[in-house]
Image 1 (tube, helix red, strand yellow):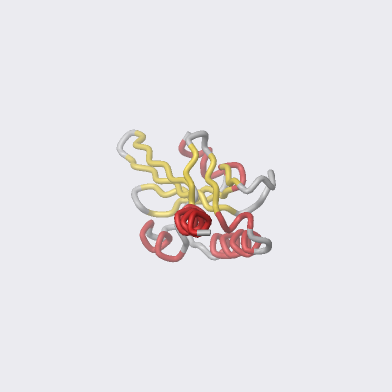
Image 2: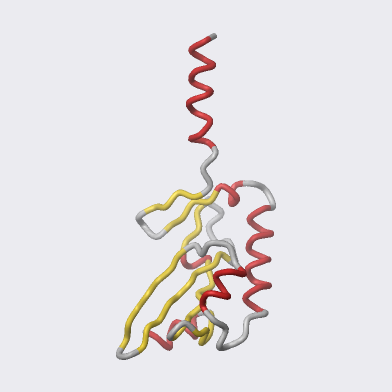
Length: 124
């Protein structure tokens, strides 16, 4: 009985993690597997993105969202581009978030210049 209790106590912290980074471009979130929570998160992200205005400051966007699923930083010429990826739709239903399930928000010199694939095309 004592061994079972010890195993349960030691295993509990391992089960309470929220985010696990995966090196192949996927992120696993605990909320994705909880029925309904991921749908609410995706919907909230889509709603927030739809309300953004061009020129919005990078930090104010970070402050209004949860942690982005992915981030990128690129310097091209004299400009610095930052890209934040937020989960907005589920394509794989595997409990992992990939970039193709996210909407990219593109910032040039810390100001929002657009979001989505068309905005990404501008910096590629």
